[in-house]
Length: 421
Image (cartoon, rainbow, N blue to C red; front, side, top):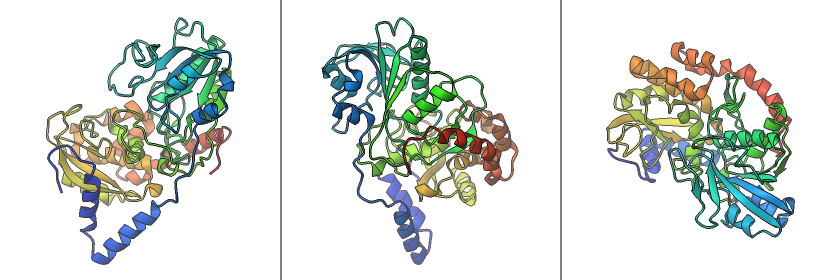
């Protein structure tokens, strides 16, 4: 099955139907029923984020403080009110400065961002994704407390947690308190997977020795960074209420707001830690289409061969359909690409990082030198695992390479978990 242009939201249903038609009537019925059951959930919970709790307590935590806010368009309460607007109106709180992360205050930019002014409040917005990625001493002058409120998605190379970490480091230097308004991990707080970052420095897409999927909230990460990385800032985390680690975003009752321009739904967030691993290579991951991270390919890829090889790998919870697509922008803009569309058949069965690296292995196996396999390490940050991707003939054994380091991380991680399963 192919489509020649960008995808519509209905393509997932169409492709799933095409997949099911390849089976017998009995197996089609069983597969559809089982997939529905595996992903079913009850009525959404009434989860309250840290901002909702801060608001409910009438902002007492910030009374008498000169506040700088690090946030974007995701920093909003259950009713859709922006953190910035709420704090500007809060009693005995003075908002003095705003900071924005990658994609800017409104989450609309896919480029480096300059300093701007917030249209609603006329406050200056200092960009932490422009000339600097950490607030300077000059930027922090006259600040008593930094409030951080940004929605993460649970992947190490999603840059918002590094922005938080860098801000905590600078706050510690200048004796400024940090208040983190916590939010749920949308792909659950149970998914911990992948090799540990082997770089010694704290990088923007690899802030310390984390696995690719950390299975933590930003508040839990803040506690871990503060202690394990010896930042030792004055830290307060305002916890989420009503969230359990096993919850996916669609079980929280919270409104989905695209955390970044190409993160448009929960399926994309679920696939991002896998598909994002190959984004630095010469493969399109669907930017410039309607469904980024749900498809991938390139002009040099044979979609039918790639689909067959990936389906033969029997990756739990996934099926692959050969496709054609033409991105309107980004990598391979206006060039016809072949590749695969990814169907999530059971999100709770996923072995996400094995899947992402198996995609890399398959592209190397079929493409040879055409595929820039070494660039996987631009986000993987693990030379041993990269070597195995390049040389192994059994990609199903790749998780053995990170099992023991991951177990060691889990022991450290356990000390900072706030929420129950």
